[in-house]
Amino acid sequence: MSEGVTVPAPGKGVNPLVKLALEFGPLAIFFFANSYGDRLFGVAEDRRIFVATGIFIGASLVALALSRALLGYLPRMAIVNAIVVTVFGGLTLALDDAFFIKVKPTIVNALFGCVLLGGLFFGRSLLALVLETVLQLDEEGWRKLTFRWGLFFFVLAALNEIVWRTQSQDFWVAFKVWGVMPLTMAFALAQTPLILKHELKPAKAGE
Image (cartoon, rainbow, N blue to C red; front, top):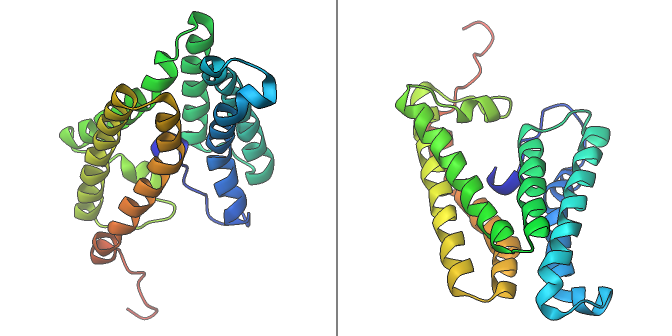
């Protein structure tokens, strides 16, 4: 879910690698445009982030269109991510200030954390709305999983703030692309015991 990672709908028959490319592709393009923008586009080194941001916006919108064409639907998180990238990327370009694209992950992840934990405060496990097509958990399982993901999003927000404020711009871009995704995947895998414990088993015939 973090930064646009979406949940596939069942029965679409699309290669998982294609789905991963649609989700991760714009970030990878952002990384390479920032890393080699001075050589590829002839811009000054301190202007690479702005060229990369413009390309990032375009790549995110193209990925959204391809998602619709290949998957047959628009994933909710992909829509949210494309909107956020366009807004914060647009502010970065319009105001000529990289602050906005750097703070975007902080705001997005903090927002996700607030939504999930806020939902729990009002007695709703909102994560179930996103994952109910791929997971069937009991109420306690959804509550615990939602709580853990809510906290994890706040951790990602804090990490982004620490990295972009203390490290170089190139390091931040590399962390955003090659650090956040592995961390998210590792966290998701770490939830397997919880999911298995609270998974609802389909009733057998005759029961």
